[in-house]
Length: 585
Image (cartoon, rainbow, N blue to C red; front, top):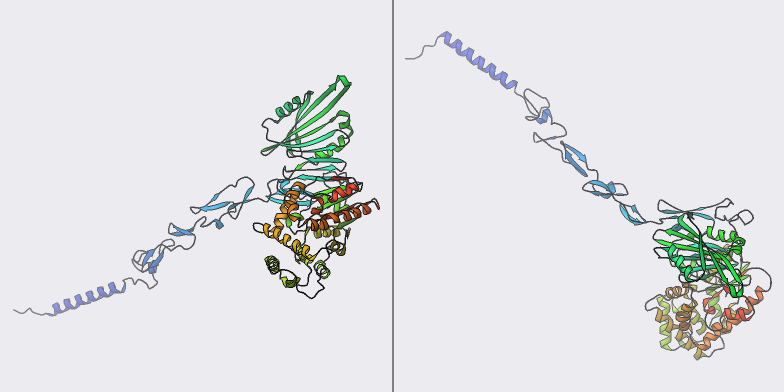
């Protein structure tokens, strides 16, 4: 049976469809749309971060909140990128390194300081490391760097400014020299009337003819006071300790021990009372003892000089430097130089610098002018028609050419030079280098800088005269001998460095045993080159020194100081008073 459709049923169906359509429209029209930029109903950070965003510094990707990606020296903390304290040493202070992304302090050992996050050797550790051998400067070590500050005021402070003199500054004294011993690491000033003996284990200075001594000793004794007393007792004299005081000696802790020596010889009706002082100075890991020794009366008489010497005492940085060949002759000085260009030789001993400054004229063997090389070549120019290669055997020519080339010279430059000239060139290659200044010329330049005159003991013609009379065979043999020696030392050393090492020792024995025998090219040549010229130069020095009362400096090659009939012997033979001056740089 078919259902009966009535108007009421139709109305009900129509109403139902209308309600359902209306509900569907309402539902669809109110549903949130993610990504439209509007936070709609029920949209959250979790369901639609595109509209609702993300918590903190998280980023919305593919509609999901994810933590940010940290770059560089950063790490993620609480959803944020946080910078590390450091990622490398450069992010830290100079005295720190970066470890586990944190800056950590580090310390350096003795005489080192931090630089670029590493320990490096300091320029200085104490004031004495900054000593520039200039009596006009305060030498200070500050922040591991040396400061040499010029004193400008004339006053009693241990310094002598350039503008001061003894008249307005007691520290300035024209008759004082500075002695520095870099082996023992000490320096002091002393009057020129005192003499110095430099022994292996001590330095002794005394006032002659008076029996006054000051000795400087570096000791390794654990108990130096007992060692001193034992030494005195062993001398067999009666001793009594007068006093013992603790004090500061020029900035260092020290003990001062004062003793009386009483010596007597009844048979001779002789009695003497001596006063002895010992300064025991503790410095770092070493002990120094300074002893003064004299009769009481003489000590009182020269007390001011003694105290001035002690007050000038200071420690210096220990290192090897030149010990000069320096002699005093009457009112002037004789210095043994060497024809080499070596930077070590240009650190002049302070006493030598003082002598240059106060000398009226500085004499060298020849005057080293700017045109020296050209003058030398012109003088030794060969007048014949043969080339240098034609004038010597082929094997000798090849050796000369090879030796010159090793020093950067072309033999063609010397093709017109005599055989004597070539021998001189081989020994004096440094003189021909435009950028080199050999010690002889450096001495001349220093004299010019001090506004003093320079002159020569002989000109180039006199220098050559003693050589020109030899035979051709003599000259060739001399050239061979010169090459034998120069080639031998160049196998393991640069010849100039080896000669400079010999020279810097300041020892006549070293020069005699190692330098002089090898330089004796032949007896005849050596006699002409050295011995005969010793006589001529000694006569000129005698004549100049006796012409007036001025002070002069004579600088001649150190070869003239050693061997038989050296220039010292010739000067003494002429009746001059000659004594070596002990001073080091």
